[in-house]
Image 1: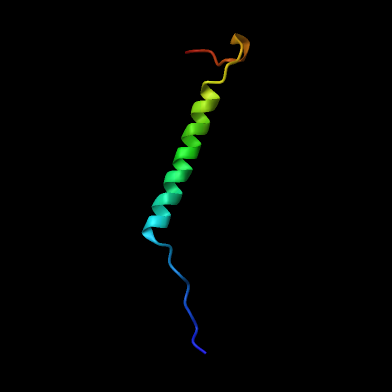
Image 2: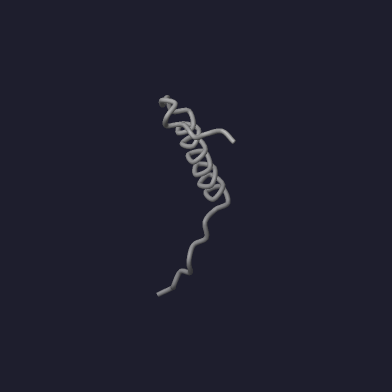
Amino acid sequence: MQTIGPQKDSTAWVIQTWAAFILSVSMTSFGIVNLPVDNWLTLPRL
């Protein structure tokens, strides 16, 4: 029986995974920043 070593992730998969992660974090942050909230809930400007 022939043993198979660990498989490597392809470059395309790594790029797609990082792009999806960065896009999801940035869109979630954008949505949180632009939530329609009352003035008492917004952060004070320095």
